[in-house]
Length: 254
Length: 254
Image 1: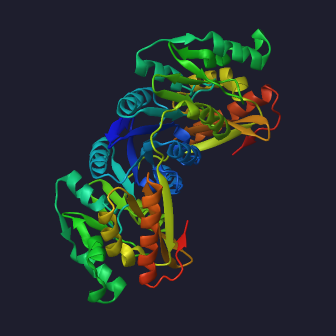
Image 2: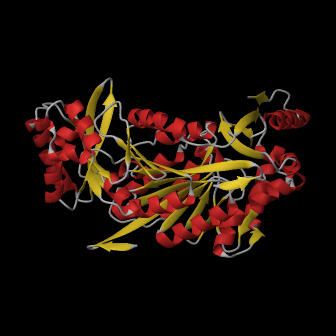
Image 3: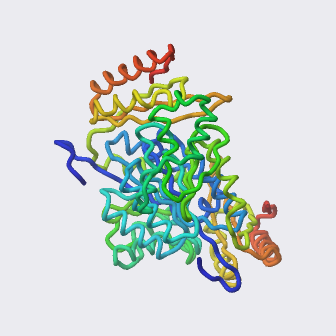
């Protein structure tokens, strides 16, 4: 956590665990959901890492990220199969044992109804790092895990979203970063010089320029970000006036 | 590069540079494209990092990744605006100067037709790390950059794809990892015990289990990956026979 004037800045990292993303087989759908909701809560997502289902990589990445950020979220690898190795390696990252968690076991029992249904594989879902608390899974039997500043969630988007929504109100955030955009029908090289001047004039804002290419034409999304709504409104108007002066009579302000 | 029996394994990392992904504003569309094509070329994507538009973070990440992997790809931040800082920081990572690259300048000139159109901002796109070669950009004026084992590409998907497609034939890869999948209408906890047995029997394959949840029902994609087509076919049939024995009469084999 760093200090930015009087405002605490809270940061987060997301670790996506899964060979299926790295092979290109599965498209990650979780990052935008987490990124947007964290942003609205005043927590800045500073880094996303997609890593393979490899124990040592999980341990090293969790330890690096939990020391660097206020919050760390992981997705993937908490189910009953042999390739679900997140819980055991998060335990190793914290130097604690995995233990049968009675609450998680009771949830499994409630889900599968009968003790004879709790196979060894299913029992694995109740093996939780010592000292961790559970994150409710309203959809299936595998609970999420919170230990220290690390939140271990499912990879299936619907389950991840339910878990993340239940975590979100418990996080402490700073002032949310708000953004406005000015979409212009000009290539970014046309607006570049003027933008630099505006960015230098308002260092408290971040002014991003994102080229786009559609139907054979270049355009640019200019995105202004900051925590002060009044300043943001003023500078957005200044950017709009600037692009109008360059001949784009109809910039889209959002 | 590590040795796996007689087969060289080539690995890669992808660095996605952009505040717009981390804020949730833009969905990353580049990872699946790169991941799938690398995989088909026998290069294993081992890590993806999404990092902010921050100079020191770019330098540190490029240096860490280029030492760890055979190939490093970056996307984003090569345009003419003040927030396009990839080239200068990749130069710093390699400890070389940025210099006006005559070939890149000529491309700009061909693109903008007249020298008077090469503003300071546009000229920035011809500032290339000393010793680097260019990656052709068939769409806009900003060339990509290859220096050492690092390939610096645009963030706009259409441009990135054209650049990546031109790089791909120049990469050396090992045996491609091929995959088969068996999609079953059973929850993964039902198949877990048997899968572990099959995985242990065939350590030369990786057997992944990916739960899905659709229309209120659980299913599982079982994905087999390996480099030997014959072994893969045999084990895929064994997995199919196994899930049929559990009562899923109609697994989808792909």
